[in-house]
Structure formats: structure tokens, C-alpha cells
Image 1 (cartoon, one colour):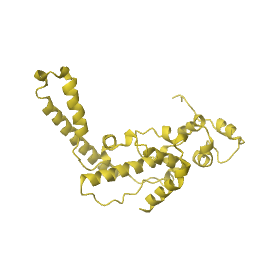
Image 2 (tube, helix red, strand yellow):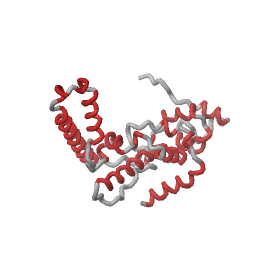
Image 3 (cartoon, rainbow, N blue to C red):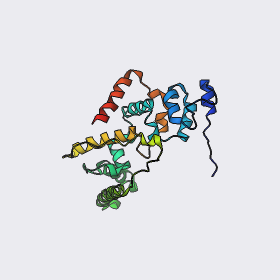
Image 4 (cartoon, helix red, strand yellow):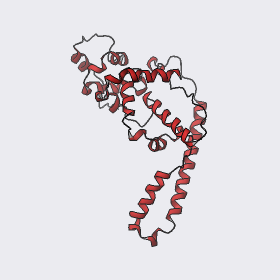
Length: 234
């Protein structure tokens, strides 16, 4: 398979005025290189490091963690409760009136779009939509059960796995068992935020965040670092 893009360390070294034999090497030690030079590289060059690093590996870079944290404070749609619950159902353990938002959208479609809202043709559709929503919730529960069962069977990683990967562990879950749906939602939102910052969510375009220098906020850097320190202590 022919690669459309291949990583080339030349532009980075040339832009920074570094020799070809510079260490840490952008090619063989990209994470260490980015720790030192990320904020000095322009987006058109640094974005190619997405070819040789993963979101999880990049979590050890303070500037990237801070960018992700800053991004969560912009209320991104993909991390909102409803969207996150639908994207990662195996992480949501409550019901919280499941399908309210989805059912509302479907009712609107029936009333305004389906057959121009002709009541003679709508008939039993509301009941069918409720059945569809119930089946979706049942499927979500089945998915959650399958994921939990598969996680119990996952063997431990080999001791010789990538060193940079081993530096980043999934944030520990130390929350008490929730008693209400409101508590479950708060814990879920916290968990999504943590997993996002630690590069553990799939279906997220981390490149648009990790290489976005507009998310750098120098005034808040100390506060952001304290957030990570407090998170590690929990």
C-alpha cells in the first residue's frame, strides 16, 4: 500500500535551525522532540507529527494536555452529555430518561416532514418510535455488557511495549458508586473529559486540537497543571 504522506523531519530541523544529526531525533524520538520544540513549530509543520505519534503518546507533552483541557472549556459538541453518551455508550451506566432528545427529533420529523404531517398516515408511528427507542436502549445495554466482558478477558500488555505508551495510563476511577442519575451524569461527564485529555477516546479528531496553537493560554497554565496534579492525587 502506497502512503500518501510520509513523515519528513527536514522541515522541522530547517525551521528551527538544527543540524541533521540533532537529538532527540524528530523521526525516532518524536515525543521527546515535541516536548522541547512544539510551541516553536508552525502548524503546517507540526501537524505532520500526527503520522508518527498517537493521541495517547502525546498526552505526556504538557502543552498538548493544556490545549486539550482548554478545548474542553469551549463546550465542544462532541463532548456534550447526549453526544458523548451516544458515541461511547459503554462508558454510560445510567438511563436518565434515555432517548428524550432523540425521541423529540423523531417526533418533529413525523409531524413536520413525514408525509407532510398528514394525520391520516401517521397513525401508529408514535408508538413505533417509542418501540424503536426502547430497542436502541436495549442495544446500548447489550453493548455495555459485551464491552465489560471483553475488557475482563484482555491480557496485560507485554513488558516490552512502547515505552512512551507505558508512560500514559488510563486515569484511575475512584468515584463512589452513584445513587442518582444526576450523580451518574456528573461522573460520566468527568470520565469523558479525563479520557479525552488522556487521548483515550476514539472517533475524536485529536489532530485539530493538539496542533492548534490558538488554544495556548499562558495565563492559565499554572491552573491547568494544578488540575492534572489534583487528578493524579485522587
